[in-house]
Length: 104
Length: 382
Image (tube, rainbow over all chains, first blue to last red; front, side, top):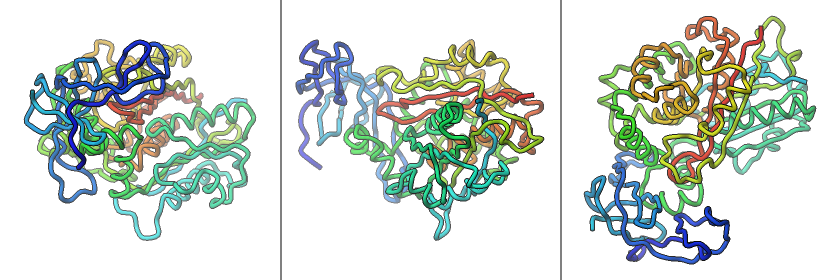
C-alpha cells in the first residue's frame, strides 16, 4: 500500500474551471485540452455496497465501496474504511490512484 | 442487395472446459454448427467478424487462418456486451454494400474464473487505476451500486429482480444448451449467497466457456423452406452521457424512437425479446428505455409481465441461466435465440406465432456503468 494522501486529486479545466475525475482529454464544457491538478476533500455518500465474493479469490476480505458526490460535483466511486452510510459526509484521501473515504 | 441472418450455430457451453479446449476450439465448434445450419461450406464464406475477451494474442485474421477461411471482409469488435449487435450491424451493411457475400459472425470466450478476474480488473484504464485497487470485484461491485440506485428511484424490492431470474430459469429448462436448467424458486433466489449487496448469486451471470456464430448473407443463400429473418432496424449508442448520469437510463434511450420509427413497428408488436442480461437491473432499464414500460412502473412490469411470463424475455434462459461466455458471446446468444424463435425452431420454448423480436446489447463498463448500447428489431418474413 502506498502512502495515504489527504484529499483526492482531480483534474480541473484551466479555461472554465470544471473539475473531472477520472482525467478527460477534452473539457466536457468548453472542449479545452488543458487541465491542472487540483484536490477535493469532501463528498457525500449516495450508495454503498459490500463486495462479499470475488471470482477466483478464495480468501477474500469483504470491501465496502460507495458512490459519492463531491462538493465540486464529481461522481466518484470510493473505498470506505469505516461504516459510513448513505448520506454520510466523508473526507477523501488517496491511496496511490485509489479514492478512499471515511466519515468526517 | 438485402442481407439477412440465414443461420445460427452454437458450441457447447460449459462451466468447466476440458483440457485442450480453448477459445479457438469453441469458436470452431460454433462455426461448424453455423455452416451446417446454413447448408454452406467454409469456401462459401468470404467475410469474418469476431469478438472475444480471450482471443489475444490472436486476432481476427489468425482465426481466419486457423479456420482456413479466405476473406475479403474482416472485423474485430471490442465493444463487450454490445459487440454482437455491433458486428451484426457491420455485417449486414458489409453484405448490402457488396464487400462480402456471406459473413460469419463469431463470438466466444474460455477465460476460466482466474482469467475472467484479470480481465475484470484491467477492463480499461479507469478500472485498473481507480476501481480495481478498491477491491470492487469487477462489474458486480459497479452494478450493485446501480441496482441500489434503481431500487431507490423506482421503489423496487429484491424479489422484483427475482421475477426475471426465475422466469429465465423456467425458459432455460427447455434449452438443452443452458448450463442451469433446474427450476428456481423465489425462496431459493432470496436465500442465495450475497455477492455484492443487493446482488446475490442468481443476479450474477455464470462465467462459462463457449461460442456462438451467425451467418449473414443474401436471402437466396439460406436453406430452402426455412422462414427468413430480416433485421428491420438496428441502432447503436456509444458513450451516450459521458458517465455524468445515474446509469438508470441506458444508451437505448437515445435511439428508441428512431429504432421503432425505422422498423415500422412498436413495442406492442414485439412477441419475444432477447435483452442483454448482465444484471436484472439493466434488463429493466433497457426495457424501460425502449418503451416496453410506458408507465415506468418497473416493479409491476417485473411481477406481472415478466413474472407471469406474459412478455417472453430471454427465452433461451438469458445469460443468467444459459451462461455468459464473456460479454460478447452472451450478446450473440440472444440474437441467435431471436432468429430461432422467428423461424419457429425454438422447440419447447417456442413462443407461438412469433413474428417480431427485439434483441439488445449493453456493456463496456467505462467507470460507473455501461457506455455502449444497441438494439435491433427482427422480423419474420412471410
